[in-house]
Length: 417
Image: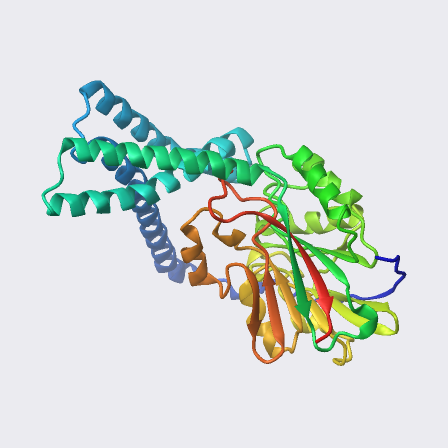
């Protein structure tokens, strides 16, 4: 593609920070019941978490070592001890690894354990259903139970090995043309590269990050978008992993919005870090890109969780992001979560770019993601004008596995209708 030059105008929006009303604090006599209700909710929540963890660990143990397999006692004992140790240690490792301290070795152990137990749980459910059917038909027995247990172990091991490779490799490029009726001829063929959910984290992926940057630069992009969830950890902790983002090139703009994970670890720090790396943080603001006499509004909003984070000046503010635009030009909006598309459609946005879902990351988690989000991956239409592109993500969160949900670097070529 021939070289383009562009003029970029910027629109910044500010927010009014209202100081807390200290006079409105509850009086001492009213505080007791509130504390009691809060304590009760915490206990109930803890109980639910414990039951879920118990189910995740106990069912695979039951399938592999307890459901009619009658292994020799040393095998049964070793399997029982292993699952018990994992069940007891897992919550402590998760808290140490993903709490305020971000102890990376603990996070690596907990995340890997979570991925393994999820895959084992999924295939144990399927294995137990087969076993129940065979038993009902009178075709059960020790040999069949052992065969099913072995099959579950082999399938899980195979999927985990393949899934780890899929998670750690440089993503394949997914190419797609997107028709935008209001796009002017001067912007026909604009190439938008989408990164999302890099999740730089406890596994050092600085080399992977550099190879991703090389792959992006090879696509000769006009616009590069990072749709949020850049890292798990602070900018200082993930400095080396994020550094290659500074080498990415784009003719017209490189833009970034916050995801929900930034609000666990210095969201404003990540906005500042990306600015230092040469990216435009679209913190409820927009750019106007001009080429060939035509214009494209490139806007971004904070993640929908920003307001509840308590961080001053952070919330998803589409009106603020679009302030100063005339409404006649096409708008490309970057919003981390697909479910923001309702607001985008109501505002007449032409194209929203999102991430967040990871495509489910480890099957069949995609069905659970669908409960919270309108789309898991790909291009979809919402209302008369608005289209939504949902990336499966470039990296991975937590468990270093991707099963039936490959990562991607997305290349969207914009075309007029």
